[in-house]
Amino acid sequence: MHGEHITTPFGRRPMTLALVKRQTIVSEIRQGKSANKWKIFRDVSEAKVMLDLKDRSLAVLDALLSFHPENELRQDAPLVVFPSNAQLSLRAHGIAGATLRRHLAFLVEAGLILRKDSANGKRYAHRGRGGEIESAFGFDLSPLLARADELAAFANQVVAERTAIRRAREKLTICRRDVRKLIAMAAEEGVSGDWDRISEACTALLKPLNHSAGLETINRVLNDMGLLLSEVTNILKFHSDSDNPSTNDAHSEHHTQSSYTESHIESERDGKPLACEPDAHHGSERSRTETVPLSMVLRACTDIGAYGPGGTIASWRDLMAASAVVRSMLGVSSATFEDACHVMGPENTAITVACILERARHINSAGGYLRDLTRRARQKAFSPTPMLMALLRANLGTEGRARTVT
Image (cartoon, rainbow, N blue to C red):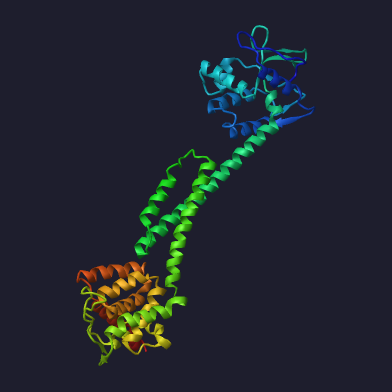
């Protein structure tokens, strides 16, 4: 501040202790201090929420700064600007007089400018013989220079918080996506779990969020969503562990053979499996076994052979064991596989799994595909024989073209 004493406002505007404090701070600007006025303005713009300013107030401050002839605000130079309301309104994009006065008051209240009133309240300057300003009455920009470092810190804080909010929202978006997609996958694959409750919990967690949600709210929702994701992951991990071929292949194979093969395929005749009759274990829902030669299955489904015991398939029992391994490799849940065996019979299911393996590159979800085929089989609308014959024709066509080329 470029005065030796505290000045009071003109007219009915009261003097306050806050004005005394602001003028005292301005009078203590260190010798030689300077700062770029537009850098200060950018900092004020970033920190407008902390300063409780609106965009109109910033427009008025921008106009005031434009009346200062230099880009630097310096402690040893005049910092009072004295535009008329008409000039100020013009540079503030035509703001109305009453609005202009209101936002000037906001800037004073925010401690960014001071009024330096003349005896009659007019704004003007006294100049010396060389044209230099000796004294001026109007708006003092000294508070901006005095608080330059503080305003820069405010701006950095706002930018840091905005960055933190953006990153927290990104993390929440990914976490929310993971939860919802895992729930959808689990429901589709038939993984047991209270998925409706978890889905409702996910929706409820997101209700407090809106465009203006603060970092604390977002982090709280993110933390809760992370706990929900952990719950989903644990359920899937438990299910995956129960289906892990490295720990359960022997059990799965034994289960398959003891539940199905030993009960229903005790003998073979001419390479054809005997028809499976309904029994007490599986009920009357099972379809009768397809009476197709095993050799035809192996010619149509060439990929399944590598998964048999010892890398070969010599019997229907071997095909059953191979299908149990392949279903795990394809990501088909044990529940889906067992339901297919229950509806179609273990032999038809083994043929179906072999066909799915053969066309795996064209199938997005083997588990979903097998469930759909099981549903159709339950309605007597699916048999693996047409699919098997189509693969056989395709393989025979390929062999024929290969011989022609040779």
